[in-house]
Image (cartoon, rainbow, N blue to C red; front, side, top):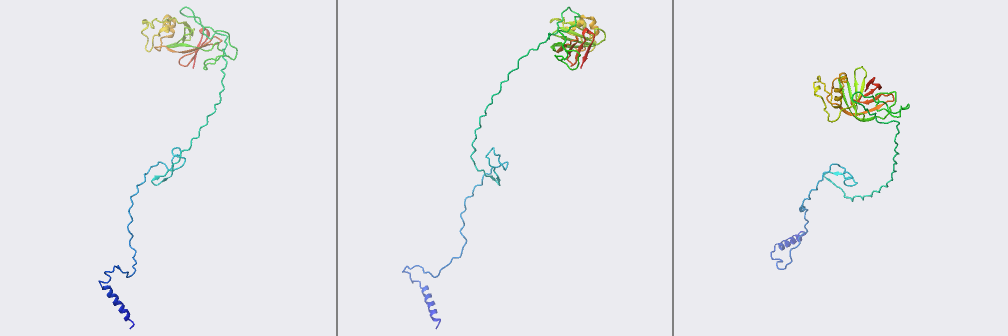
Length: 293
């Protein structure tokens, strides 16, 4: 008795479910039987986005960018790119205009003309061809202390110079047994002999005039490695037999031009340079001459 009502209820429900015509014309729609809980399913795929373009890589030679090129900030390298925060360039500070200090005007020193109690020009040798008077000192001897220096240091004369060094064109020629030196300002030729016979040296007027023959065909056969002297030296050498015998032939084909300096001491000694760097001292009277390096 206790289970019969349940059995009847089940049968009624089954008949009602199997009746195809029940509710066909009433439009009641489907009947809810029970609540259905959907089990979780795989979520729908996410829409695929377009790929983001790769960043442009700017290579940098150093991790720190020089401040004078970009900005006063430092840029640090991070993997494949450099992030630089753009900044405005600093304002240019105006440079102050420098104040010019007036320069003092230098007053040139007064020109002082030195006074010499003698003529700075060497004596002119006037005379006929051949041996001429030896140049003599000009003026008075200087007091001790020598107010005028010598032009050389190789010699230590005991007297003082009577004139500043006279610089004038000259020429030099070496012979087998001596030398010749020409001094233009005096228009004179000094002859220095190697032999000990007197005079040891002489001075002659230069008689050569432009247009004369440089050499003489009568002297075209000199010994080997010697030459006939030319121009004024040659004219004097050919015209003075005693001189020619003492000097011999020239050992250099051409004379050597140079600037000769000449000073005369209070004792009458003449000092002059020569192109090889030496200094000749010619004692007054032609009694001696020496050469100093």
